[in-house]
Amino acid sequence: MKNNAEAYWKANVSLIVKLLIIWFVVPFLGGIVFVDTLNQISLGGYPLGFWIAQQGSIYMFVVLIFYYAKKMSDLDDQFSNGGE
Image 1: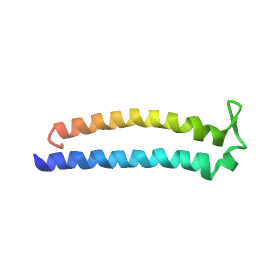
Image 2: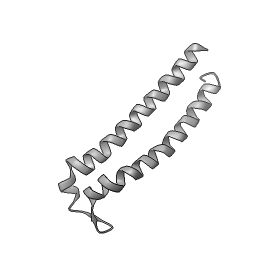
Image 3: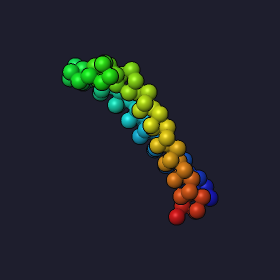
């Protein structure tokens, strides 16, 4: 029972860390590192690099929330059946 709970927690933390890295890297690269290149492209009348820094990170966060909910549902199903 304890090993199952530890494996569940480890999988949960691993998922959270991966999603936080994605949430950091995408706006950082798109809004800071590659901003000059991306600003040559326009999205809705705004430079793409600016858009990613302002709106893209928010949309990314919302998508990651839904992805996290789906993956946690899968993890709950996996570990409620004894880890099978």
